[in-house]
Image 1: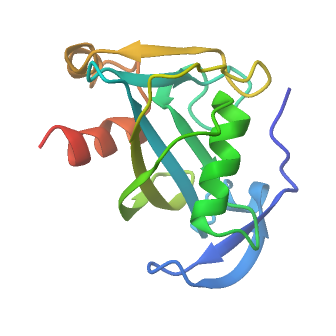
Image 2: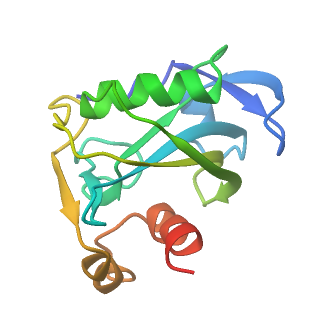
Length: 167
């Protein structure tokens, strides 16, 4: 499996206003084109956090543990539409109530993303996509604290989780 480098993403300004469009390949080639993504942090009622394992074939951070749901917005989609689509595609969940926590610009050597951060509490069934993920599991907050800085988690997840949940 491989990411579709011809997939079309919106290009946005720091407030999320669409100012153009580009392919996934163009957005991930170091061009610094700001493109939007949605994240959902899934907590269960015990306070544990579900993390997905990124497959080895991913073009960004392969094999690392990451936010339960993270995906790019398609051109013409709203953040809410993208979130619902990605949650269903990645975890098979349709009945959840997202809480929007904010957005920020994530800047790495390879890409620049406008990240819309959401959380939910969910105790129902989770069916990780066998095509998009290498599985997932619930982690205690202590397990996450111990893993931070050890190359197990994606840098994006580490910084976002610390900013929104460990402060």
